[in-house]
Amino acid sequence: MVIFIHLKTESTRSIERAGVLCERLRSQGVRCLASETNAALLGAYAEPADISSAQFDLLAAVGGDGTMLEASRLAIERDKPVFGVNAGRVGFLCAFEAEGIEELKLSDIYALKASRRAILEASLKPGEISYAVNEITLNKTDFSKTVEFETFYGSNSLGHYRADGIIVSTPTGSTGYSLSAGGPITDPELRAMVVTPICAHSLMSRSQVLAGAYPFRIIPAQRFANEMRVSIDGGAYGECDEENGLSVALSRRTLSLLANEKRSFYDVLFKQISQRR
Image (cartoon, rainbow, N blue to C red; front, side):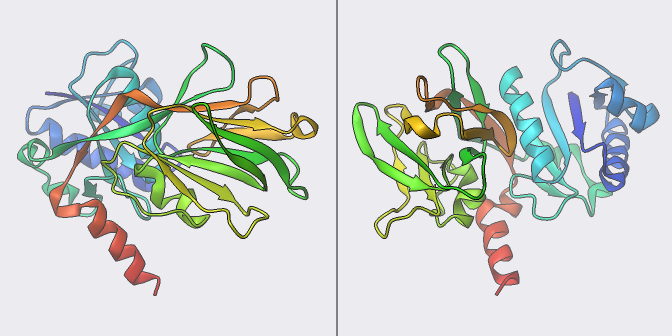
């Protein structure tokens, strides 16, 4: 087996845990690859390789949720399964905790179940597509103002909003920014889009769960055409103009996330809820 290792290079803990993971895997006959930068940090434990051309069986992320999202997008591009080792705080998407990784057996990885997760495609211009694992967010560039925009699901108008912005999340991302903005928790294996306005100036504005049969489109009002920016999974993507707007659709591609039944989505979720009471 060949595993490509992705890690958070700014975190000493992630580097140390990734080294332990590689050492453990290599002792069981697994070949470990990493980018040149990461391989230099891991020393003799990983071979340098270019992920765009390297041949490997699956991808492993060592870090927190942000690192796991980065690795997930790489896995989507290569159509490979991915699993995570949580060296961060919550690690919703991770299969293993960093503590105890010294005892990891190859059979533990083989025992993971592939969970096919829906992902989103974002487009600001025809023919240009970027993928989102968690959410696509439309925010105002001037935080002191609200913005106005129209929303459409296929040919159906879903209304005019005056708000701070809007979030379109996957079920996987429903426990992130969308939840903080008042959105629902959805089962991560659903194929759906969760649309949540951000601080809308209306008593009737609520989240909507859409089946994803049609694209969801957002068109800024003319006077706000250059005052709305788009981010994908927390990273800047581009500005939204009146001519093209923002189009979001369920992708035909999916994320093959290797999940641990001993550390399920609901186990992590309710552990976090109980800790914050």
